[in-house]
Length: 240
Length: 173
Image 1 (spheres, each protein chain N blue to C red):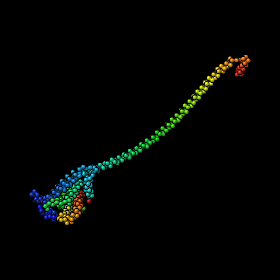
Image 2 (image 1 turned 180 degrees about the vertical axis):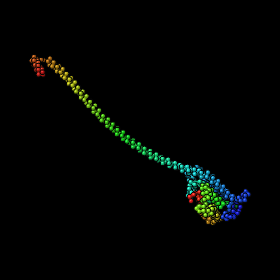
Image 3 (image 1 turned 180 degrees about the horizontal axis):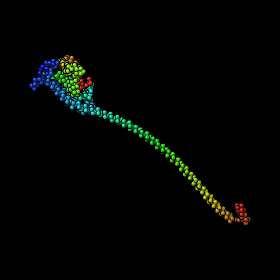
Image 4 (image 1 turned 90 degrees about the vertical axis):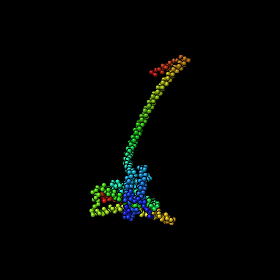
C-alpha cells in the first residue's frame, strides 16, 4: 500500500502552494455529484411528492430535526442550507472511497476527499469561523465577547482553548474515520486480488467492511452536521 | 512546503494549502449553487404545500360549517313543507265534505221538486181522463137513450119514464 499521491508542488512557482491533484479531482467529482443529484431532484417538484422528491424532503426534514434539536427554529432556519450541503457533500465524499479505489501506476487517484486531513480541517475551520461570524452578527460584538467569560470570568482561557479543540476534533474525527476505513479497504482489496486463496479469504471481510464503511460514512456525515449545529447554537443562542 | 507533511504523521500526504483553498472555494460555491438551485425550490415547495394544506383545512372547516347550516335550513324547510301539505289536505277534506253535503242537499231538493211536479201532472192527467170519460159516457148514454127511444116507446112506458124522471128530478132538489 505504498501509493504515491499525484502532487503538484510549488504550483505557479509559489513556494507554499501545493496541490494533491487526486484530492482536487475527488472534491470536484463529489461536488458535481451532489450538485447534479440535488438539482435533478428539483425537476418536476410537485405538491404531492413522489419518488425521489419524497427522499429529498425526508433529508430536509432530517436536517431540520438536527437543527431543531439544537436551537430555536426561528434562528436555525438560516442554517438549513449549510447543514444540508455539509451533510450531502460529506456523505457523498465518504461514499466515493467506499465504492471503489483506483490507483493506476501506484498513484492513488480515486479515494474519498474526506480521507485527507487538510480537507476535513478546512471544513472544520470554515464551520467554526462561520459560528463566530454568526455569533457576532446575531448577538452583537459585546454579547459575543461576554460569552467568553460566562458563566465565570476565569474560564476565559479554557473557552479559547475549547474553540481550537472543537475545530481540531471536528476535522480530525471525520478524517480519522474515513482514512482508517480506506486503509483497511485497501488492505483487504490487496489481499483479495493477490491469489485465489486470498480472494476467498478476503472477499467476505471486504464485503462486510464496505457495509460498515457505508454506515460509518453516514454516521460521520451526521455527526459533522450535528456538531456544526451544536457549535452554532453555542454561539447564536442566549439561553444556555 | 513539506514541513507541514512532517508535522502531521497522520496524513497520507500532509496538509496542502492548495487543497484547502480548493476545498474552501468549492464548498462555498456548492453552498451557493445548491442554495439557489436545490434547497430553495425544495423549501418553496414545502412552504407552498404547508400553505396549501392549511388553506384546505380552513376551507374544509368552513364548508363543514356551511353544510351544517344548510342541513339545518333544509330540515326546517322540510318541516314547514310537511305542515303546509298537512293543512292543504285538511282544507281539501273540509271543502270536499261541504261540497258533498251541498250536492246531496240540492239533489234531494231537485228530487222533491220532481216528485211534486210529477204528482201534479198525474193529477191533472187523471182529471183530464175522468173529464173525457164523463163526456163520452154522457154522449154515449144520450145516444143509447135516443136509440132506445127511437125504437119503441109505448105510451105506457113513456108515461112511466116521464114519471120516473120527474121523481128523480124532484128527489135531487
